[in-house]
Image (cartoon, rainbow, N blue to C red):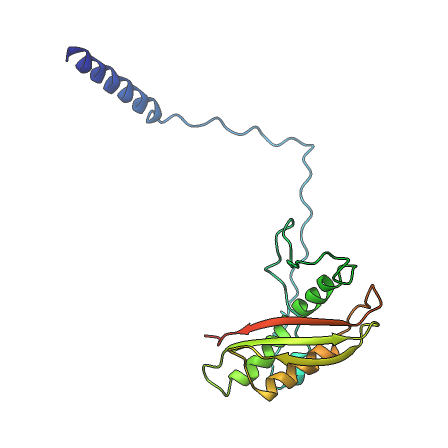
Length: 192
């Protein structure tokens, strides 16, 4: 018991000594003076006097074609954007789907705009759409259609707007010289 009491006294003494050293009020050493060889950073240009005006909200389907998306949810550098069971050679070769996916993603805000215009007059609208784009070997659009899904947004005005936008895009040529059938899913939820 006596050894334990002695250890406690020693511990308390060391703790008090450590506290006194920290609370002693000593200041850290001053930074050395700046040397003459340090060059000042160049000054930044003053911001322009008139900030850019925000674009007005889209009011008609034609306005949706002008929207370009800032993609913020890219897969990680070592991620696989598509998980096809086929080899690249069996799927048509040349990584055909990656540039098509990137193109649709770059216009994602435009496709969303088509749904948002519809949702303004249809409160609580939500659902999925699978856009099927058939491309000619030269990248020209052969046909745009929509596959059935259990929660499909069945609205001709949304389909028409999305079809017009998809048709207006410039698709890359097929590396294998074949026609391409490409399906891209959308899942629209009402904005809050």
